[in-house]
Image 1 (cartoon, rainbow over the protein chains, first blue to last red):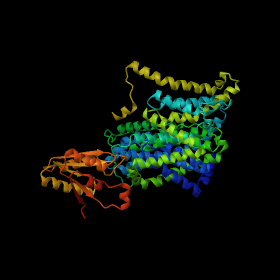
Image 2 (cartoon, one colour):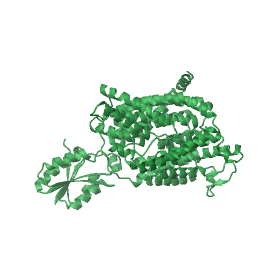
Image 3 (cartoon, rainbow over the protein chains, first blue to last red):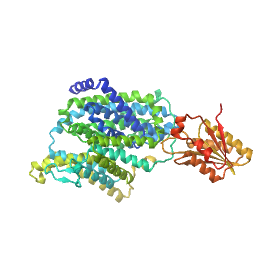
Image 4 (tube, rainbow over the protein chains, first blue to last red):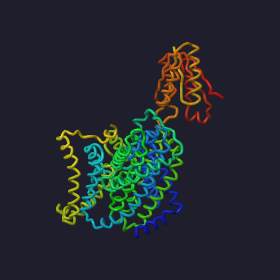
Length: 510
Length: 130
């Protein structure tokens, strides 16, 4: 019962009025950015990174965790009321959720999304609390070669498994790795890719990259597509559920949680796959139970399942983040950057070095989750009003905070020029459909990987075999090969069998 | 030779629509209903959605007046309305008037004022029902 004691200690630390205030701010801000399409928790956390200079590490993590969970919840509101998913994890919610709303059941759809998110988030966070210490204990034993291999696996999975196009994924990854290379070489002191600028000797600050790619890039993209036909907003009142809705929701909630958590916890994370699987499962189950299932006309199961899966995977993300220092989502990557600004190196030793921080964070996740439910259920009609904010005013505000953030890193105008450049990169990747996740992971994991690679090679005296002298490393490299070869082989196999490769989205729309 | 009506789905637009229909029947001409948006927000209350649009069409279909509904999007809603006025060579343009605070008018500008001053034809400005 060690874990419970530690978690209770965490609650003791998290439950101060000041920390609760930051949790509430985080949750509100997270919902705000989650509701508005194009702005997500990753951008919000990136914009708030400069705040970390003035705040205690616990408080800023509490706030960021609130933003993360809030963003997940906010996306569902937009999906249900607008049929415009606020973020990719809510795509599945939109299918049935919007149909429910059109049939006048918006209040029930919002309620099942909110309560499902709460239940899945709570179970997920508890699972994180119970799993992470064990994994971290094992992870401390991991040597540099294996650690390098695991990071490589994470990059390969994120790049080649997620997303529609491998080549686009790898383009994003290599842009990110290149940005990560800028600066002085760690052991020889050679300047790399600095172009003679002294300001670049320390490397590019992650705040500038994150704010540039997320905020500046999105602002430019929006400016280029400023006028769009307004969409119909389905008016809604206070969310509530009837007895029948409860009866139909709890099964999907639990099944969604079970599907979502493992997917969030493995390095191939992301909430797209589990939400999709949950949707398919609920649909099959409903079809089996009754011939005339409501699926296709707004079934509450189709909202409850994917929403739970979405939040459970959001919680699962904390397992690799806290146990291994591996980010699997864009928000997690920015969270790592936040930890680094405090001089905390996320990695297997985080649990041992900063137990108070980790347990307070986990406790505050549970608190934030409860706040989310309490705050958001009554506020749902208000969130819908946010959609009327004109883009010029909204993005002017975002640009203001972006510039302020980039400037405050070093108080150097040079960073503002970099911000514009990374804004251009952010615009370009949106224009050419390059996923942002591999890019930002490349920026953050690249230097860490280099560190571990150097460590392993130093130990072996520069001999390449030093990278393969651990059993775990070889096992992980085998997984890397499988991750690269399997999808290609499957594609070949299907083609040779004459089975047309189906796009998962098309299958749903059929 | 038409009556152009600046329409938004609220009491002011409603008043303009009613007056515009009367005007078209009195003059024996057709009418064009214009609904414009700046299109710079995700949702706009003053933009007629698909449900409202078919409702509007149904109402107009019940009249024995040639009619047309146009939706436009541009930086300046008044300009979009005036463009239709010029396009259709309108006899009269009908708009609804509302009370504005001086500050609100200074910040947001006034569509009605632009139309009153810049329209090449007569402007019928009506008030919402008391």
